[in-house]
Amino acid sequence: MIRILMVVVALAAAVASAQSKAFTLTPARIAANEVKKVQDADFARSFNYLEVQKAYPYIGSKTIKGLPGNQVLRDRCLEYVRGTLKTPSVAKFVNVGTPRYYTDAGVYFVSGDVDSQNTYGAMIRSRFWCSMVFEGNAKGGILWIQSDVYSR
Image 1 (tube, helix red, strand yellow):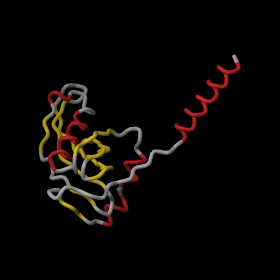
Image 2: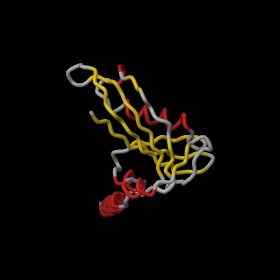
Image 3: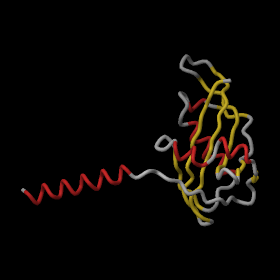
Image 4: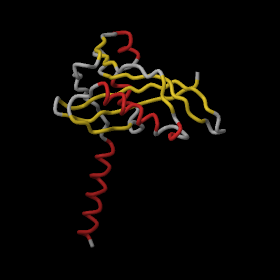
């Protein structure tokens, strides 16, 4: 009985220790050649990879092979945004911008518009953005995704 109690106490301590560790992101700071790289200190001061880190656990993740290119960044963003909509099956994405990598901030950024139904079934156009942080190397890694959809 004492042995079982000791195991339970050790397990509880291990779980508490794991839950108390803060989530940290280490951006790879590299991008595929096709992704437009931008240096913008003002953007980096107002929004950077730490903002994505703070949003954990309310961010998504996707394991990818290789460095994230334009198509991967765009597809993962739209997939994540679609998952947040009330009626994702009827959503139409328009004016989706080219992904950019903000070198000073350590984030990839994609934005655009989405036509989707609101709770009452009416089609409305909303803005969306995705901020993504890549952790990994040239062989692949994890793409962490944070997004927001808002009406104009």
